[in-house]
Image (cartoon, rainbow, N blue to C red; front, side, top):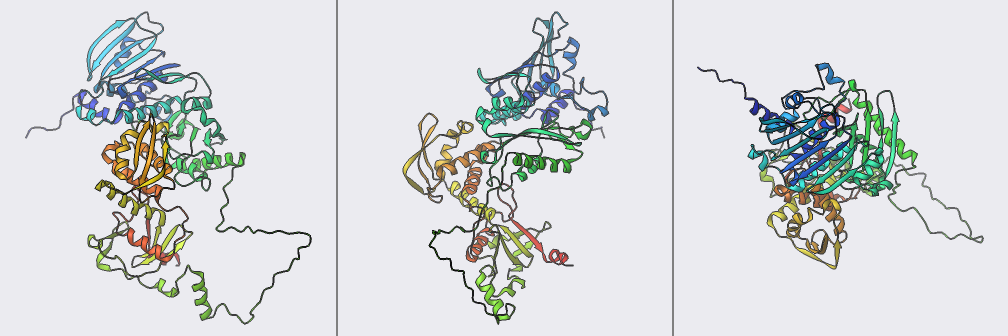
Length: 607
């Protein structure tokens, strides 16, 4: 039998590698601009046509390349930045793998012009799909000029799955923001379709942030700074009252390199606990300075996921740093009381003060059986027959089963009948619902449960493409935020199919005449804006999943507020609807709804 294992041709291997490194036009921008920075450029121009589909041009005044280096740069794993594996743990450059140019050349038409300061004449190379078309001398400026045309021209499937121009431009902007925010001493000119998007001069870090995202941020930001033996942290965070629904102004940088780090993001959000509303996002621009040998940036092709040696300690330092900034600016949590304890009182010099009197029954025994029952009855949070809490639940064993992850699942024949018999419900901190089953103790996050129920309801309405409209007595004029202006026309038909009545009044202004009947008319602008922000946050093509995302954002906007007090009947109704929903365990955006503590786990606690 003939041998079947063969080496892939270089151009095929490069195309496969390009799938990891070059995912979309934004990836090309990132790799080429990082190469410009590594080349010592202090003036970089980024020119984009047709969201990168037609062309991407990066011009820099860096040190340029010799004719031999210009040709070698397109070979896979050709790099000037590392010589041994040990160098991976002391990296100071942005790129180092030598995959970027080879990957780009494999899936696009590339024109390179480059010249060093010591050369009288430069080099011009044209490559198409990894094939060298020509290499010749040409007069050009010192530095490097890349023009990338017809990205993915030889991989139609990849090109077909590029998103809309608005989405691709959003990704390009994101990559540019990540670079310019770490290089305030570098001049940048960014042009989209012959229109200047950004023109940045040499400045300090805060000025770079303001010139990138707008001067309105100036009144929102406070500085943070900490120096320790493990890490140095500095940067800027937003005041709690200046939070936003969107999270597009959250940046971590380590050694002047952008990183994506959900664990450290959690540290920042924990520092904001009790200071901001649920669902709001603070802005932050935080810069870490860590010894190179203490981090590993070689764990992902895009180099945005970075592993730290002392993650837990850094988590604590970061959280303390943010809290310290709040203390410096005298920012403290709001005080909330369950009832208003203020009393109206008018006291004059003639007012007679009478001490309160209290009758005491010295024969009262609070531990007698009768008095115990009366205490539970008056309290209202514990059922009369409190011993029922410790009895087995009346759930039907044949229609409930437990999977290996200890999560509840219900059979499909449970949908059209009441899925449980009478049990007891308790509310904890006006946030959690507690009840019992044969599985043990169930804890339900009531707000998330309500979100899941509403999500199913709204999604069904969207799929039916009909919903009752409640007219607004005085129509509202709404101007979407600047970040949402381009997507409003795209989402408008779906909003109207959901039950809104929105029309374009004039440029960038919309008239709202009606809202879905089931959301009321108290805060339609807030609900609409929440939906727009959720829409813009998703990275994939929203046209494919618009109904699900609209239903999710509407469910989040209209679900019960955190801390809503429920009586036992309301808790029972909520639970009954939840277990008939499409997913009892998680909200649509993946947050846990139900946690089960088995009898065995509970017994272990008390051993």
